Amino acid sequence: MARYVEIIRAREEEVAKLIEFLSKKSNSFENPKIILIGGYGLRAFIPFSRSTRDCDFALRKENWYLDEIKRWLDEEVLIETFEKKDSSGYMRCIKLIKIWRKHVRVSLDFMEGEVIGRDEKDIVRIDERFVLSSWRKRIKIADREIEVRVPCYKDYFILKVISGRASDAKDIATLVWKNGLPEGLEERVKEIMPYPEVFREKLRKSILTIIGDKRFLHSWKGTFMTTEFNEEIKGQVIQKLAKLLT
Image (cartoon, rainbow, N blue to C red):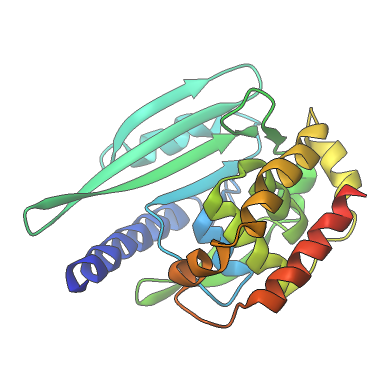
């Protein structure tokens, strides 16, 4: 257990250094506006944090910012994947840090223009409104607080539903518990999703199914390391989410 905690601490410290590096290069995430999403972005919305080795960023497609970010990071990380299509680009950066005799992997993912999931129709556009409604927030990473730019709650919520993994279901349950449902969700889904029907499908077939499982509560507590979440709160979350399907 002690070694696991040390691995988590070392990974977070490296992520903190890389985020600070990006902040310096981009003029505090202003040029370009780089928006933190994923598990680290979650820390802007809830009072808990969970361990994650991936640090995810989104950008609006304008002048292929990925090319510039790649130049910044070339000497800091290994560029594992670099792809550019008509409407979107994707870059995955890897850094290995050595702890004892083990190499621990840290990943940075950058998505320009669109955030694309595992299925063909899992697409969320990064439009002008996504960027304009993003906001600054200081979040804790390792032993420091770092100011980052994160999406508005509505856009972040949509990204989480479309991702649709078990970890996302835990995040969504916590988001709804602490913040309720975002307002104007249906209209926004239609604005930034080429296939808006996917949102309801993911919610019904993935998110609600995972949260409704009898093992969910135990899994949630193991992830966030607190006993605050209980069966009563879980039921309230399910009721709120179910309203999105009516």
